[in-house]
Image (tube, rainbow, N blue to C red; front, side, top):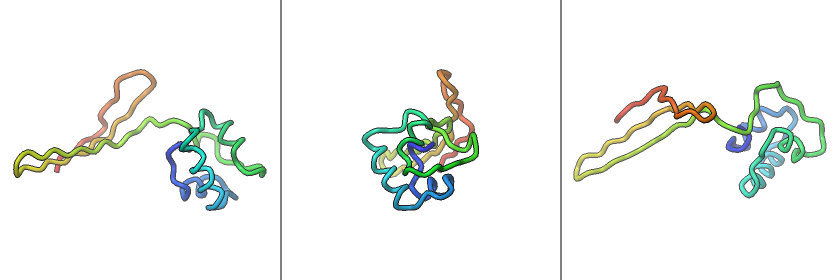
Length: 98
């Protein structure tokens, strides 16, 4: 997801993109996220960058949820990986308590 990927991941996924260019893209998306891959392409520097079809997106299906609850001396932490598909409720793929 180009809307949440750190600059280093963008550099790895878009051949020829420099770290400075990726950092500039990340700076602009905070105020204006990319609504489509076409908009992402338009905001790239004026070179013809190519990437494998399906490698990039502007949305996410997977989310890592982390939680912590403290009551008295008890401290419980949890993590869960959720998958969201369109309008359906998310599916819990795995969860663990610590």
